[in-house]
Length: 212
Image (cartoon, rainbow, N blue to C red):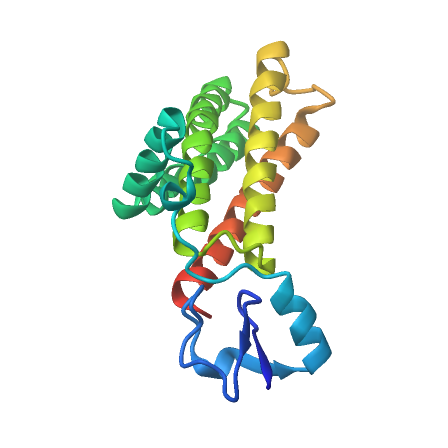
């Protein structure tokens, strides 16, 4: 028996031929590569089955709180909550950095303040983005921890942590964006790191959706 690895998301397929499409990320047949049998066996054993039943089907009966949570996650996935909510931080973070750069160029605290307000919205939106992404991961991808999923989770955590740090930093030091403040460039640099992490998370999401 041969083993095939999806080079987009890491899914392992067992069979004489690679599948027509990856059951996880929908990558086409040409994205699969044959791997050594031993490596394939080990990876297959560590890999949950694709298309695992939704959480609500495996939750013990009578667990009311979990049942309600399951219904919420299923509804979020059905109504495409993650693609909808993820556009908020992904759209606002470039605006946050742009306003911050304009505050540097024109030495304007007005632009710095606008950047901060947008950043607060990003921080408030991120928990919904992460939770809806978790729901999609469980219900659409069977909870499989593939390389793409692992990186996407890491990028999401990095974004929310960096943005939360920036909000707290600004609240504790409202002079951080004033001319002559020694932390000004570091403050801007952390913003750019957060934007880069969000952009890479979007790139990984594109891989899962489009299979490239």
